[in-house]
Length: 564
Image (cartoon, rainbow, N blue to C red; front, side, top):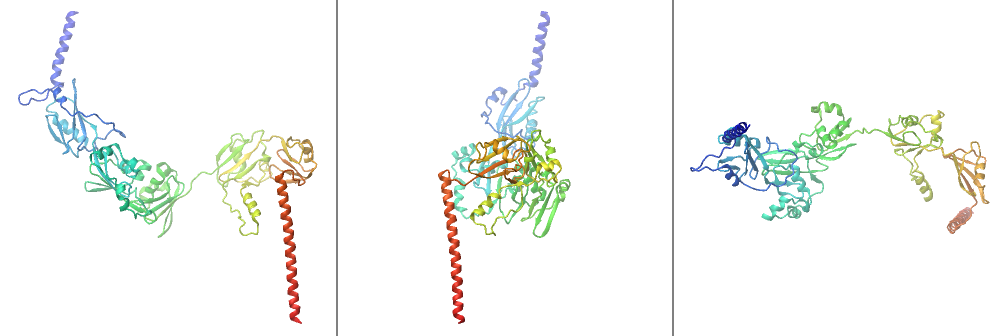
């Protein structure tokens, strides 16, 4: 056993001695002295990493390395080491005392391959990797129709929308921590304050053309549709920023240069037109991907041509056939909303149900709601039409007085459909078609009759089939001493039946009128005012008659004098 333990120990030591030359190689000698890797790592750049908000892993194939980027070189092995280095202002990366590489403008993937090839002779058979530890910050410029144009400090992981949001933010909110740090080094006068007088005559008819944002970069110009990015999330329309980029936001006239889209879509309104714009592009911005798939057809209206009807399913199947857009065009989205009607009250499943506008009937809606409950009273059911485009008279061309017009105005607020739901359900009346927004209300049959007015004990009286109004009045204590008329209001149709022998049904209301008696000061004043008004009306009538008679007499007298 002791011999086996010593054998294992010696074997492990020998394995470690063999592995060290492979995975723990030192840097090459310089000036005759060995400079160990541990000492070099103590001399590397040490800077605390700042917290950065990332939208995901940095794409090494597209990220361009530039001055200020901090790269970490990781040399693997049993004693793996790391080396941090910052790209200099000249775009060079210094790897301790091994040498300097030019990396500015190259992708991170290219820099990684370059560093591996450079270090491979010194670290044979050792895994080497290069990662981005901290992206650099730099300045870009934003110009055009923005409240806060000028130079903006940003990072290589920022997109065009980031500096646009800063340029449109209030000055108190537009200052970022990076910008604050920059202003401490070089005081800058806010551009918005400087331009306030310079652009005092700016017209309110011009607005930022966010669908035609221009990104000037290294002699080339990209035209970006920021609204498409905001609606669809298309990152191709919102690229990463690079050193020295110039972002220009043009302005467009909302009437002269715009195309208008309207209809049941999330974002209707006036949009600036892109040179390659089509109807499909505009719909993608104004409706979004999901909204676009729910549309059926649109109309393209242009002054120089008749309106064009476009089917969306055909357009989505063949995008190349999408008509191009011009300034002044109008795109009208045809409404495809599903009509609904509601069934409330004592049905089995009350709620709102989809219907076919103008075709689904009352009976079919109640069937959709599961039918009537046993305690339902269809005789007093009613229908409300909440969305009627039927023209109602305004009494402007009539001789109605003020009170008549006011009474008419109040009456116009009623939207009930005059129909007997019980007769419809029993097949005694034609079934009624329903429209968008209609509501069918089925009250409960409480088996009572409401008696009110000039009776001893007004209130609800149990219903007894076949009994006339007189019976229910006596159940309520009988009529009062000043009673003069009896009215029965039908709960289902609203019709009025008069007299003590009028038939009564469950849910009806019986009203017992009385002689006009001023039993309160307010009522006494109203009665007095009514009597004065009537008296003045009679006086004016008599005066008018007398004036007319005197006028006729005068005319007759004058005529007689002339003819003599």
